[in-house]
Image 1 (cartoon, rainbow, N blue to C red):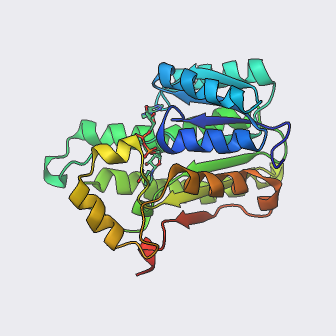
Image 2 (image 1 turned 180 degrees about the horizontal axis):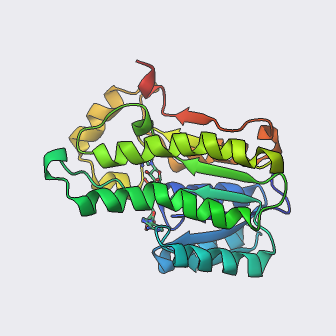
Length: 246
Ligand SMILES: NC(=O)c1ccc[n+]([C@@H]2O[C@H](COP(=O)([O-])OP(=O)(O)OC[C@H]3O[C@@H](n4cnc5c(N)ncnc54)[C@H](O)[C@@H]3O)[C@@H](O)[C@H]2O)c1
């Protein structure tokens, strides 16, 4: 197995892409701390992971709050001793036209999608051994614009910048820092923001002619979390069915 004896923290793992990543890590025998704002969802993901024969812990955490993040890593370290892999996945994508966007709308998206990566990575590094892996879920919105998502595109562009600098700073500890940039992925969060017509239009723009699934993002994440990717750092892997090739 690729991740025997490793432990990962996955944020926003109660559903969607985060849940898919937690399941894929567990299939490689990685223990997982399942963290989310929604504790009930965390607990049901933990039950799924335990069936795969790994240790798993549910922890409620708001990744945009320093005290909540400190509590997450305290509990994770107390249970597992060390954290080998951090997956910064929690994120929000509320559509708001730019001219109606409030300061609070802007701050919320930047705090949940970008400040969280600063907070979680800084807390994780304290309990991460040599050779640790930090993987961030960015978006193709870091490369191309989407109307109604000025704050979101800015936050994900920020993620790509952050990882390059952090990769340099953590290289002496042999900790790698990378990102996966998903295209359109079927998740509870994405389906709230779409209609059958908008899904049809999206699929028409994707060369591989289908929406992505959480497993598609989980595959790239497991690769980056494994020692197969030990010489890759500061990179963004686009997983979008070819959407941004045109
Ligand atoms: N679905 C897509 O098409 C898509 C595309 C590109 C990037 N992404 C990125 O993938 C990640 C996951 O998205 P998803 O589609 O699975 O979304 P989702 O809404 O289905 O799931 C997100 C999870 O994050 C949790 N969360 C939200 N705010 C949080 C906070 N402050 N602290 C902790 N947890 C919090 C939610 O409770 C939820 O369980 C996000 O970073 C998103 O930007 C998604």
